[in-house]
Length: 562
Image (tube, rainbow, N blue to C red; front, side):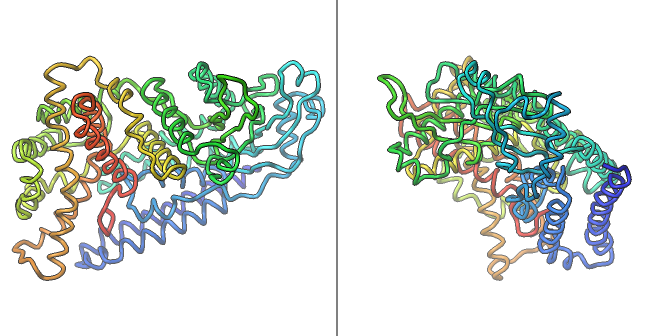
């Protein structure tokens, strides 16, 4: 690819984000200082949608890394307004396939010999085409097929020059990220250079096919003793960093519910196996398939299987995107749970630091004071008492900590987002397979492992208190919404012009501080008491789905975004 083309690409990306930044400064800074703040608020949502639509068009026209950027941004519910993430949510690789001659050249350079020397047959029409590479069906030579025990394969080949395109795109994004570090309204709310580096790490891993092959083998080893799960085998002799050859395991897509039923397979059983395998990945293996959309999962029938053998298996493909559950995540979630149970504000702040959800400039003493205010005022209250808390008191709390509400110093690390996204996709697929599916029946033993060793009276305290504070956090946005509705209808007299803005900030901050922590608290508390108090345990675990969906979908509630 010519350097002039790459330079033009760099300029186009930088120019797009420069215009977006200039527009943001004009609307959110200049016009506000000129007294047009209400106009900025009223038009913000519409402007955000237009900006996201323009980026979507840019990404589709440029291909390369830009589509991946859009997909990455669609998951950043913690730093972007919902109207932007929603506009980008279904952004897919809508790019034409590469000419086969170019693909053949890449394969020749990587495999050292022509395709005809490696394969008995190679389909020139791609099975799938994406922005970074494309997939073709092929068949191994008879000798290789006899040795391996299978002959049909799929060959994934990177687009030519894609590494150079990625370098240019990342360079442009890093330039933009450095600009934004000098603009306080953005820098105080998001560490943009860190987001760029997270994205770079994820993308570079996706274009290293040797790493993807290694991920597939790690996954295979983790489920070696589980006959319900299968993974395509890697043909290492025909695999390099830019070419990946795998056993062809095409079967019934997990989203094809009618085909699953027609094959005589119980969809409810499929949902249970899918959930169970993901819980093992997350809680036991600490290594999980991070892109579980319906195109990456098959249900493979095994008609005529022998006694004791499964009559179908769940088949995972595409291990370019995997997630890991580091020890710090387990430690942070456990620490947060204990902090909630013991009403320890300092410990809760420490857990947030362990989870790496606080930006470097976060005012830790202020967050701790806000946390202790919540604990002191609401910690020992029953559900009936919480429902009857005066609306004005909630608003006074928001005003008291308006600095915290304005700064909102939270940003979720990539591994936590990957985990949340995977759980969200998993939940949707399981419910699609079986509308009556209940994941909490399978989750108990895994949740108990998370707090293994904490035991004794501490655990009892956690169980007693976790649900109460979690339900308080869940109730705050609803209360703010009801108050704002009264304001809009003229049913409530207010004496401070700042009140509505601060309540909206309170609503958004509660949503973002951190639905996933509340999910973990309810889930684990419910799991711990299931043995002795089944009804309470099921109630707590069932309720935990609310903050999870809230964190994944609502993200940053409020009509105007940020």
